[in-house]
Image (cartoon, rainbow over all chains, first blue to last red; front, side, top):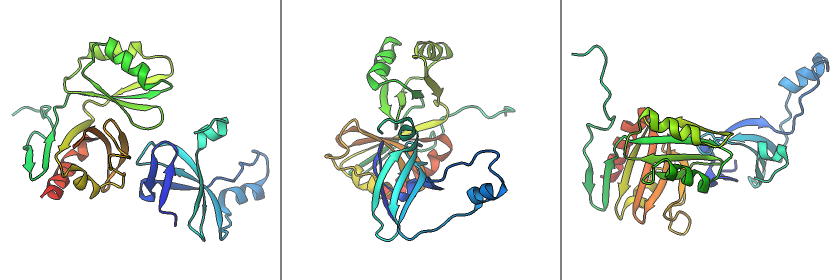
Length: 92
Length: 172
């Protein structure tokens, strides 16, 4: 697992300072999308070998939510961005 | 015997420790103000100065977060004056009774801190004035370099004794 994460606010920190929430590429379905779609969204996850895009919380640092793109094969971290700022269209 | 415990500094029972290349001491429980919001260090500094807190240090603590710390306690009136002067969208939380400051100094200070935190403390990466919110062991601390060989750790009050003991142990 990637052991060093470069937080856009705090710099390079060990993974122990972070809490991983999960897949950041999911899109919340419409309220009336139907039980199958919702079941899929809430419970079903694929676990691909390779690239993952996840929400990480810098819980022992700046307490910001980040989006971390990492590779589970090479352990390389491709990008770390601030989730809220990315969503708002601003740079971290 | 009073019915309620009286307020006392949490590290009052701990004596300052002077070891080889290490000095460890609890700082007076003055004021620790946490500020969050859309402002800048320069604006906050100006605000503190105009409130008469020229002696207080202002320390960044992450994206749009700061701690304003000092050795003198603030009364409710002084605190209210600062809160009123804050720009819109900026908020203050008085942490004076919630967080405790510990000073660590000496030539071996960085060596000791390296045992507990992963932050790069070399002069080139963490010069005087730099701050970091990080872990020391499993305890969350706010670390500031206040001098060439002088650091301050701000820690939650309930963790202060544990952290102080740990630092004493590591300084041995």
